[in-house]
Image (cartoon, rainbow, N blue to C red; front, side, top):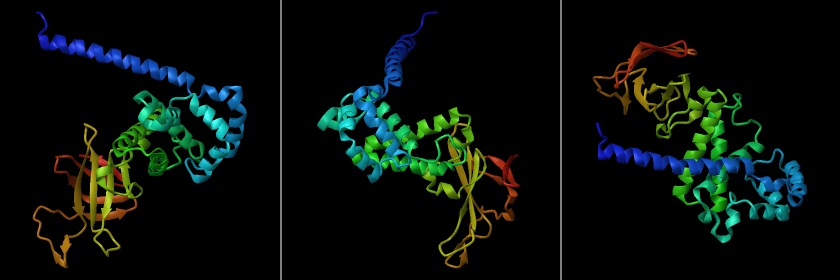
Length: 284
């Protein structure tokens, strides 16, 4: 049976996209091999010997970091002139003169440089994930100001940097660390999240002026990778001192806060069902 025009066209399109992607892969592979080769040249090697020693332990992008670069300007200028992954390579155009392949290498260069001044590497399991995100954001913000990066491009750089960091952690066999972060729309401090496992978490809720939580939010990851959540209460919700009449609200009992144990079970509005017992999630 002959293929329809649609199927023939889709196969042809898929092959052409693959050809372009193969060109991208080949270009990036060359960049892996050739990145910063000029640092091994006679004119740069002595300058970078000094820079390596002086930048050890210095926070990436800080004023001290930039002052050291200014003092080694001849070496830096020579390096920028021969490496298109630096915006300075393009003179007054800066980032606007770069293509996407330059920008990918530039972002990888930034991420590697950020690790240079840190106590922990990105794959260090001793450092909480939220701290890694804070360091990443701080470094990106410094470069946003330095290179006057417009909001749309900066958002793309942020999204890509997070994916690269997460994938690198996962590549080191630390998928749990990469996964234990709630989505941005959760609008919560990641440091305050109580993780039951990689796919289930609790955040406490408090009314203004209260010191103890009145309930919380249960977060769970769905099979498609997206997050779902639902509120729960330890006592009847109050509004201006009076109970809020909400017929469908159940009240949970806090049997233990550490390890966390709550009863009864949780039945999410999406149909997900289970218990929180001894600090872990137990599926129904």
